[in-house]
Image (spheres, helix red, strand yellow):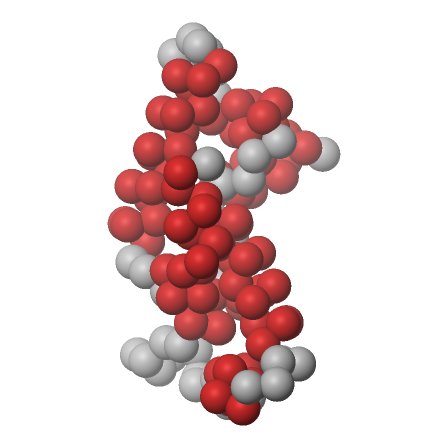
Length: 118
């Protein structure tokens, strides 16, 4: 809960962070889940997330960013609306904008949790 309150506020910006930073946050979340449930070391992280009905950090940030950009499109502030109205660069371009995270491929742990859910 400590991490998610901050991540919800900064998700459009933090979603653009380096994958290594998101991986470090995911490790912290996995440790909290393991400590909270007193799970044995052999229990997979994907099982913990499924049982706790908890999404991984990357998916949580992606969903929060999507909600932000959906709400920003109808906001009365013109500066906030202009964030949504931009032409994304080619995918081989080196400059990425925060909204590009919505089209990124899922992480391996996200795919594993989705497979376990099915």
